[in-house]
Image (cartoon, rainbow, N blue to C red; front, side, top):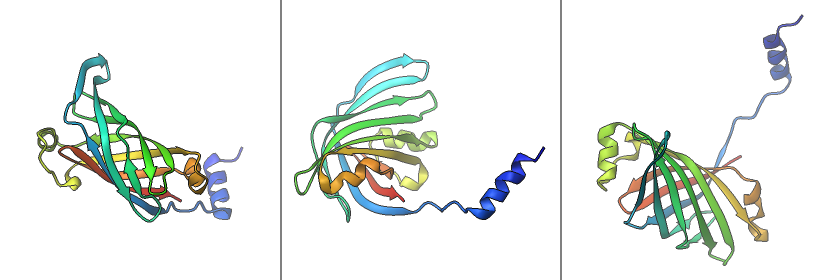
Length: 170
């Protein structure tokens, strides 16, 4: 019987997997309502809170426009401060096309850094981890490529907003 690891290396000798590439899409500034709805400990996972998304903008070489006032982040925060991000909101591009955007991700860091963020203070984004996966849906013909695109965002929290740079994974 052949060793499975040897078969794997033989296959990779013939076919090299491509390294992932990132293509910069846009800079997002997502405005959040100051009122957060704290539901409390809804499961063993953590405390549920809902943060309304009230607007914003995005601008870049692949996407530009406004964020509409209709979404929220349905977040869960674990006992050790991990925020599990789950946003859903609507984008309107500069040419009027509507795009549904859902992000999922994580924000975590040292307790003292998370405390500063909670208090609304600006914190260097290199001191904590805030990353999201981006899923798009649209019927706009010029943006249909988004329906088959995986995106990631590198984010930071700034008081009443979340700011992130979005990249398309190629």
